[in-house]
Length: 266
Figure 1 (cartoon, rainbow, N blue to C red):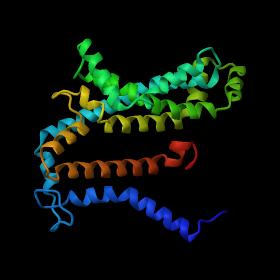
Figure 2 (figure 1 turned 30 degrees about the vertical axis):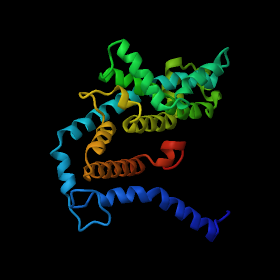
Figure 3 (figure 1 turned 45 degrees about the vertical axis):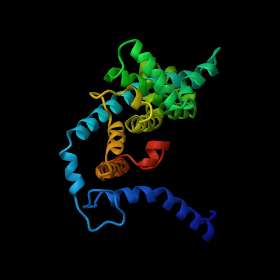
Figure 4 (figure 1 turned 180 degrees about the vertical axis):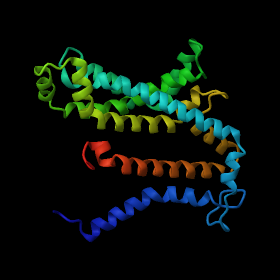
């Protein structure tokens, strides 16, 4: 086994510290008792966490973002599974073009997508609606789910499915009992990545959101434009804590290695 030397360990520690430092600062600022963002702060207070409960706009925006993320990620993953299986298993004319088309939202800036969606949704009278947000988010997050499902489908041995068919299993039984369990780590990890991407999407959502369909990132962005209080820092701290709790629960129940690469806890 090759061990990292002191210089490599120091570099890794500095790199991790550079990544984690902004999150730590946001969490510290969230506990300030002052009416403005200040670091260092004079003491600790839960004032701004309590203020979240007194701000119904943030609470409604959170539930909207949660519903939007769940619906969009489920639809995107449901579309990604058959698309990934088709691309991974079959060679047909236009296969590479279809794959590039499905992954193309990764290459287009979200501000360009936002302007395009605004123009199109306005023409068909669905701009500012929940269904319009779902459609836009599905298009944006589909590549994230597709790439992870495609990675699992590509690494699957087709001989296992052929063996099941030779023993008399039908196509649906083979998919349910053989294919689905083998690609499940890619499906779950793709769904998680798609959900996180949808929940955090800001740039595109700014263009197609309305006062009745304002997501949490858009609400935070608008709040920062109007005020300088640490309310957004408190919301961000809760989101960080929720993410850590979710990842910890998944690690205890399933195992993150098994979830993302198909190995780990048995």
